[in-house]
Amino acid sequence: GISFRDYVLKRLCGNSSNKWPKSLIVPLLTTIRDLHPDDKELKLAVRKVKRESAHLELQELPPLVYQLLLLSTHGHRQTILEMVLELFNILENMSASQQPCDSEGQASQITESKLGEEELIHVEGTVIHHFVFAVRQDVLLAKELLHVLRVRQCA
Image 1 (cartoon, rainbow, N blue to C red):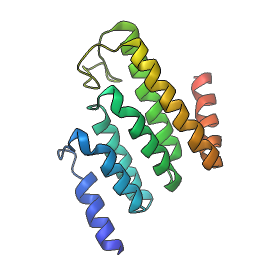
Image 2: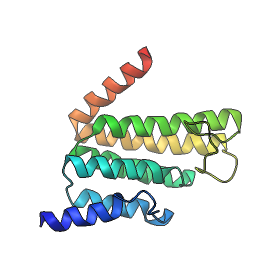
Image 3: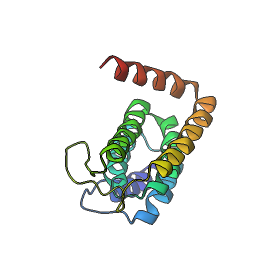
Image 4: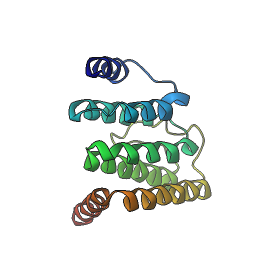
């Protein structure tokens, strides 16, 4: 029941020193989505995924984004959308400068090798495809995406 869900989610997401293996981030995200987390648990899971996503390879990002978009149906749409947009802004900056850095100016571990512009374009295209599919399924996500993009454009 609910106490089991709470226990599992706190064990998976509550401890910031508990690292997820890279190969299990997307499956764990799928499991979290299947547990139907409440608002507090979802916020905890999204923060954990944000920390763990910095360690993924470029090719692993589209499945991650897809699962995040599916998870957004449970709430925190704005947080999830901003996280995905921030991640791709970092990748764009890395690709442009070929110097890995994240939002705090620290060395990023998103990819060990130099970002290939062609590979990044392919990954971004796949992610856009996932966005198109997700917003067709969830009108609230589409509205939130437009809102986030407008705010970013004005900033």
